[in-house]
Amino acid sequence: MHAEYLRDAAMTAAIFGFFTMNWFGWALEGPPVSWRRWLIGGLVLAGLTCAAGVVVAVLHWSDGTVFDPDTGRVFGIVVGVEFAVAGIGAAVLGWQRRAAWIPVWIAFVVGVHLFPVAAILHYPVIHVVGVLVTAASVAAIPVARRRGLLPSAVVGAGTGVPLVAGGVYSLVSAVVAF
Image (cartoon, rainbow, N blue to C red; front, side, top):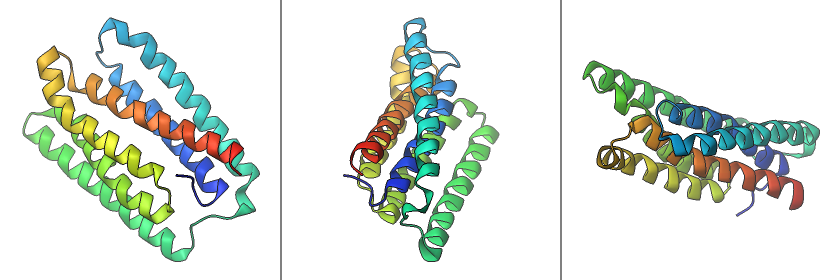
C-alpha cells in the first residue's frame, strides 16, 4: 500500500492535507454544533499534515519520483479533465438552482479522479481514498435530507475524513517506510 517513492508519498500527504482543509472548511458552512470542534481539529491536523508533507518532500526532492514526461502529461490530462467536469457540473447545478449540491458533485468528481491518479502514481492507498470519497458524495444528499443538514456539511466532513486519513498515512509511510 506504500508509494513507490518517498517524495511521492510526501507530496500526497501535502496535497491531501491541503484539500482536506478545504473540505472541512466547506463543512463548517452549517454543521451541527457538535461537529464544529471535530472539524476544527481536522483542519489543524490537515494543516500540519500539509506542512510536514511539504517539508519532507523538499528535503527528498531529488530522491526520485514516478513522474517523468509521460506520466506528468497523463497526470495533467487527468487533473484537467477533473477540473473541467467539476466546473461544468457546478455551472449546470447553479443554472438549475441546485447550488447546494455543488460540493456533492465536486466530491464525486474528486473521488472518481483518484482512481486514475492511484494508477499513475502506483499508489494503492489512493484507490481506498477514492472509494471512500466517492461513497461520501453518493451518500451526502440522502443523509443531509434525512437529518436536515446542509449537503456541504455532510459531504465536507465525509470527504475530509478519508482525505486526512490518506494524508496522514502517506506522511507516516514517507517518514517511517523509507
